[in-house]
Picture 1 (cartoon, rainbow, N blue to C red):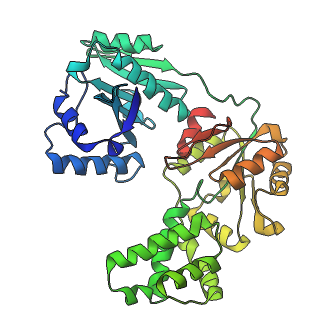
Picture 2: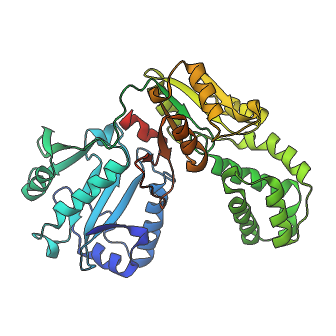
Picture 3: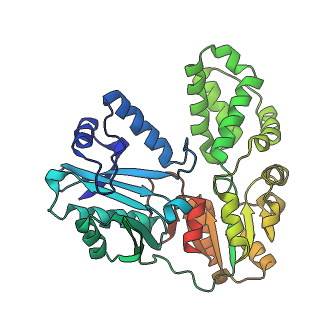
Length: 389
């Protein structure tokens, strides 16, 4: 069996499954009654929500899955909430699931919940919260079979917990060090907004006269940018070769340093996570880049005071993964490599540099589609640190 995200599923089969799923015994089919066009909009909305975008007030990011059996049949749904707010912590919890009536009694609910618990493990969750209607003895049995226990109850519901094996232990940790761009700061959002301003400032937007053509240029530039890992000279050469637009690289580089920081944004819940960690560990930062531009970013987002040390590669004419930067930060924090954990989004700079220095690492990758098999812990959102540290 496997779980398939609803936006990656066969739409016609998904639509048929929606029609088969009743809302009962605490399970809510929130797509019930939608026609095909409405369901397509629903799928797109849920895809956005999964990345934490366009959330309604009081809602958290969640991912909706289809349960597919070994014969390729769509047999039910799983909903996984990435983290809990107070309402969910005292209510529905992390995971909801339901099996279509004609597929019940075949063990699919148990297997679906096991798959959902694996998703929770991969997110760093050490104990899954669930709930079950008191009239639904079969679902309670499923949760007990998966290692659950009743934590508390009210008149209508049992509120259960399922302990999950902690994937990576973190003993003797005294310090947490962070990358900045792509880890705490949402560089993708900031870079996109800066490229929008760039195309307007240098008159390129006026030359195109078409919103979609302009967006195509923007998306090309974001691809060429590669999270800031490619020089501006390369981007301008691509712009010239692809669109016949020629600009002075020195002028762009100077302009970019002055303007990127103005569009700087933190990922959601960064401040909450830093507040949580600040009282428990020493905090440090190691970031590549120019001293002036990185300092401007940190001042604009207002997080400098959280850190006991900030090491910028430009200060030392080098960059991660050079071990020198990690060693300087560790010395300033007064900790040994095995007493520190590094959190970063780039495997090729952040993670490998920390590894070569003798530190433990957590790879923060905000998007789906990348995996690793070397035992380095991976999380998808900065707030996942609160579940494991």
